[in-house]
Amino acid sequence: MRNTLLIAASCLIISSCASTRLYNWGSYEQDLFNYYERPETQEVLIAELEENLQKQAQQGNKPAPGLYAELATLYLEKNDTGTAISYYRKEYDAWPESRPLMQKLIKNLEADQ
Amino acid sequence: MKNFMTLILCTIAFAGCANNSVKDDPLASFHASKPASILVLPVVNKSVDVMAGSSVLTTLPQLLGERGYYVFPVHTVKTLLEMEGLYEAQRVHEQPVETLASLFGADAILYVTVHSWTSKYVLIQTTTEVDLEYIITNRVGEPLYQRRQKLRYTPDSGQSNSLLDQLIVSAISAAVERADPQYIPLTREANARAFITTSNPLPPGPYSLSYEKYYATPKAD
Image 1 (cartoon, rainbow over the protein chains, first blue to last red):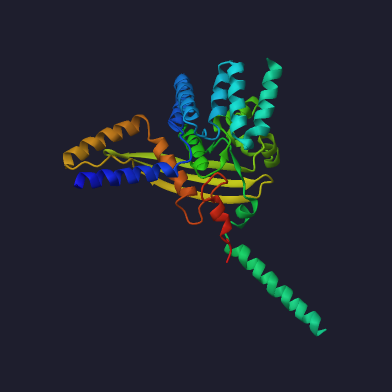
Image 2: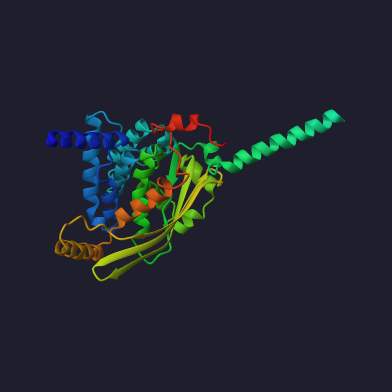
């Protein structure tokens, strides 16, 4: 009985925590910080962002603001302009506030290609 | 003449009310501006700790995003500014606000300065003292929200029962701290105190579930 109550209480706490979060950010904070401290960890940042964003898309969740654009910029650093443009487009589609900037970036990158 | 006097008195009375209500709402300019998006600029770091600025910068998007704002991607913003030749955060902060706002299409701009950041290693615990300043302005540079946050932080070494356990855990946590100070937990705490757990916290943004309710409540009375 006591165990059941404990489990019920834990579920309540966990579910109330989950409902207060708007987005799943994955390990973005720590990974970006690590990247600034040790640039050789760039691949970890890219892989974690990509995996998290794919997972959120599959589950029909709204991506956290800015994450698609961050991924695009990291691909741009690797001179992969095509992939960068496709991720800037995803940021554009997800967030109206990003559109003036994303539009400029996409236009300039397409002109360079 | 009597009517004229009444009119003047009324005007004074009303003006008095208006002034009072503005004075009584410390976030009046924020409430009038209602920004939907926040541009977080690279952080000016006046401390000797080279990672202090990065730590503050990387912990702001999640906090402000969860508060209901569109937060411009901080690494993308930093990279684009560098492409424009602006490598130093100090130089970015000196740019005209209007230029930055229109370049990115932002409603509000957040300027953060690390004034100091010092870690002291006393026996087995490490304590870090920080002094951070946060200023949000609108597109024309009028301040909407300002906080100066001084914080003394000692990493939580977990909850152990025995004194010996505690000593071992503290020794390990001090060693970890020495190798790589706990930047992220510290700046999360400082940011949260500046924006959330403060009197008159940052109002919720349009994506927050409490946005409608917040702005439906009269702000000044």
